[in-house]
Image 1 (cartoon, rainbow, N blue to C red):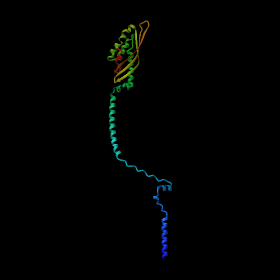
Image 2: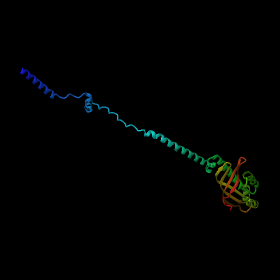
Image 3: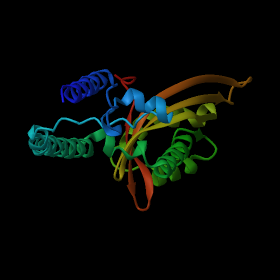
Image 4: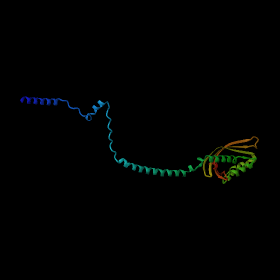
Length: 231
């Protein structure tokens, strides 16, 4: 009886010792560290997406305020642009069509150039040509101005057999406002006296401005500005 109990106690001690020395069971697959799983499978686990912080509602509230500011600014700019456009339209330089209407400017320039050439040329043998030029190219107070300027030539023309030739070398249309224009004239003049034994010829240059008006379908000189040469 004692022997049997002794054997049972011995077996219990051996079983207890074996349980103590036995290696710990490996953890389940899902609880193993990621490092060990990467080595076993040859792949790195997919990274978990980063969790972004939630946006506050401040930015959403700021957008309407910015739109309101932009609306005010754009409204102010529109009002300013409209005022500037109106001012430009009222500017005399903008209304001056000599700067924008090339066809009209060319018409004025050509017509006045022809008028000056004929009005300030005089041939003692054909005084009727001078009279025709006055009627065709002059109007208003320019008629009297031209008569005063050509009076010395007319007085001496017959006795000295005088021939005066004027040629416009350059002209510039300063401004055109509707049916009125101002033209600056540069001209060369040749005065030949054929009554002398030897023809005597003198040369000169003239610079003046004329005021022109469109009347009767054509441009005529209405005033002559000597630019202070006669004062």
